[in-house]
Length: 243
Image (cartoon, rainbow, N blue to C red; front, top):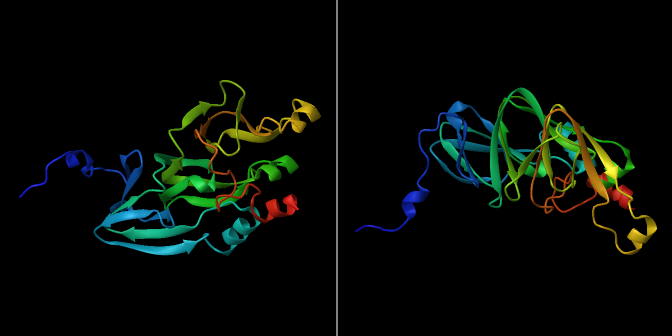
């Protein structure tokens, strides 16, 4: 007896020498022999060999309080062992990168996993009432040396912010590098007449400058700065602003 067809093209990719390796554009394999990782709670779709999973919640009391106040952050689970774990999130595209004593700022919704050697915290990345209204005042900062995997709702584009003035929809900006500065821009072009017609839908924008990159996904489905997914107001602060 035998099974015939095209299953062979879905065989697991073997022999990866790194902790993180992509099996395809939607699926990440983590080799735990290289050390433990922090992964988005519920992201495990399969594993082989020895692996244990411990729910870490929001990462301690201080991070839990920050998440409650800002809406930003992500529930994580600590994964360790000697086996291989496969991670995914709603069949979104997965991007794997390696930080070498560096730092990136990431929307909490888009974090899939990172090496346990990476430090993370919720920090302010922009100011003003417009920033609060956009839910874009807080973001998750990942810093140190190790692997990071993020998800995007569709294939993203990497923009060099030094090459030209760069702006993005707050719901489409996924992450940016350490040398990038971010500010919130409130576009009032068109005045009252534009507002009366319902506006363009692009009132709040994120402006990027400095040296480095910003990663933008081709979707506005994930609300920037709302770790719970679905709120545009940035947690308790957003509720206060929204009345």
